[in-house]
Length: 80
Image (cartoon, rainbow, N blue to C red):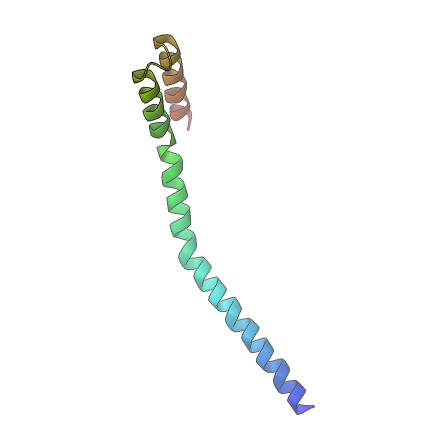
């Protein structure tokens, strides 16, 4: 009976320790993940414009399509 009680206490302690470790890891890792994701989201219009400029420079798209797409990208950036 005492052995079973000790076993339960040790298992409970292990679960608590693992929960604390998981919480600490989450609290440390979450801000890095959030900042990285936010920066990537902010750079999307820049990347889109770079790709658009490259396609225009290579002659894959014409001037009117380039100007329309550029205006769409810039308008979406202003709304964000």
